[in-house]
Image 1 (tube, rainbow, N blue to C red):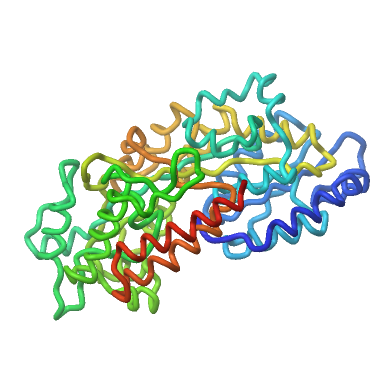
Image 2: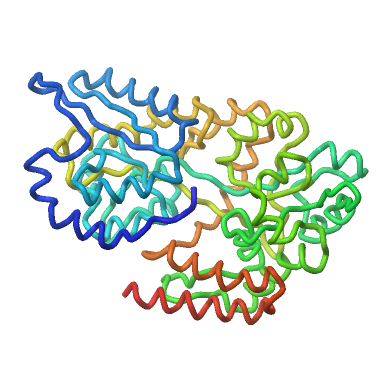
Length: 427
């Protein structure tokens, strides 16, 4: 649920310029069946694993709305945003599509997404109070709503039970602290076998961001106008995390991570612990080694408990020629009924309050409920209008600290300066 969207400003400008023409010409991916009153909507998503669940929701919607059909279009994450950019430029945006927090403010502020505010106010199916407030806020812009939350994800601690048993180390539990994690990682590290106790790549959401919040630090100021990477609490957390590989030698180096996919270390038994988002449950469940040897626990705590929360939303293209039909579909997707269907599919954690228990019942391979248990102390994944741009600048500056080329303090100061410049350009 990461990665970047390229050159969207120019794309969005083009979209706005041709928006009126597109509505008149029906220039989206949606189609008319030829029979008056029948409409086919295109629903764009990026996760093949979720397609069956989305199809079940669409089938339920079609049964209630016989004049509307839904065609689900799956595009892999690596191509999704590039394709969406091109669609915006070429006037062929899908009627309804998944929206990500990293892209939401930029899309919404440039009139690419339909304003759903008044429709939600008049809806008997959608109640935004039923969704996590932080996720609702992500899809608001200038007091207007541009997306209805679909799901949420948090970050948890995965561990290899077999490696723990062989080393005589007790499994992680809710009382674990940073010290407990480090002590266990040292015992689990076995240079002769090429096994490390923990995987600490230079990653934000599945890396040090949760530790920043656990240390009572921040990434951005609350008003999103200033970086907090140069504050003492944030520097302390990043220093502790970077030391796992540089000083303590319990994690592979950044060079090793650059040569192999982060997850491959855990899936091959080369790291005994790692932080992974709930979206990894499907992949880990299908991985024979992980399914047999591993499980998941809540994150260890620092000065306080914390994990990162993120969540997708369903949005409507402002240029769709089928505004009412697209709204009806998104309205249904935001209903309790649809979220229960999503819960029973077992792939993503539904954002609708009261449906997580149904999701948890589908999780039989791992202790997956910990992802829901951490919701009460979750912090929203840091975002602003230019999230991808400043996150890239942040990682480039901090990489020097993770490779030992610079002190953590100096790298954080450089990162804060670069991020502040980007945040200033958002005004």
